[in-house]
Length: 141
Image (cartoon, rainbow, N blue to C red):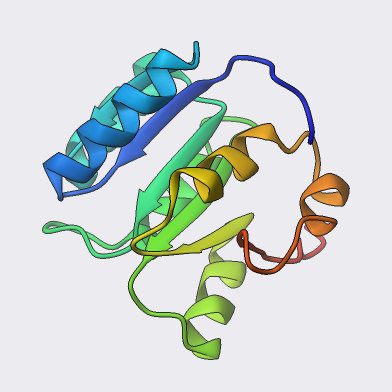
């Protein structure tokens, strides 16, 4: 299922235990991982680290993932993965409008995170089963 290329990954989640657990898992798999627990810190880490993929909690203490998404996209080519406890159609639509590529419901399983990391492209991701994760269609720029 997709490439095993190691990636630079930023995990942004105010749930420190969840962020650190995911960072440990991805680090053991060979990915270079950084964590941030709020929006301001995430922007600073991203500017220095230049992640290829960001797992982004939508409900941070200082700003929302929806507010952060366009700012991350200004840093260059990055895949954005929304992490949320809300799976309503309007939540997914807001994420798509903000430029997210993927949408994971919390609590996501290790397999769901790995499926997103393993996918090489939107075409590959779209071929994954719905039970693994939800891929948001990319709207034309």
